[in-house]
Length: 294
Image 1 (cartoon, helix red, strand yellow):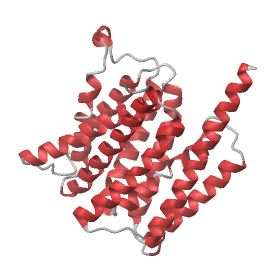
Image 2 (image 1 turned 135 degrees about the vertical axis):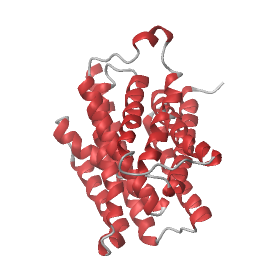
Image 3 (image 1 turned 90 degrees about the horizontal axis):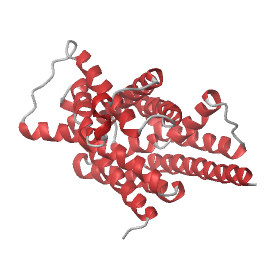
């Protein structure tokens, strides 16, 4: 019988695997319009969520007292999703994944403005190191004015705002309801692209692969949430960095991509900065818990 920490470890590992395969399929889907791919992510992402709705909630499962916060979460999540999908299509997998590790940096900055949190010298140092890492990774993009290097950064900003809103939503709303509104909203939003682009009828194999974007993304999100519920953050968070190894492997196997030394150095700095932030958050939470118990 596995302990809670071991189960959380397993959930995080599977979450990273599923997200990595989803990224691979998104990059492969570059011949399909972005709106169509987002539709598959939203519609088929509903499937794992629907299995979690309690029977007693089926009649009014969609009821919420916080529609405004759900709207902000869905809007910022949609922007982040579109940005990362565009980045995955146009940039090497390892480059995109490396920059996305900067999300905790932007979350730290946003927590100052939206949650009035105090940020100490260690986290400010981590933010500085992280930004240096982003600049090192993106330098070729800036010199050649490659706009696609900005998309992973937009993703990080959107994801960071999502994290801020989720802190407030999760105090009253179940995870499945938050996930339902997000998947439902991006499904509806994708229909607005029908008039501007011609959606392509996929073959059976392509339909299955596109459907997996939604299913894998939905399951991976649920596993990620469960991992943090079951295990200590300090135990499961480092597993997220396995995604960079998967990205390097998939990028080389399918697209003959090899990360440059600048990407690897920048990735190291970004990962190092996010580890500092995570460690400081864990330390501060322990300090707060001790002070309350005294």
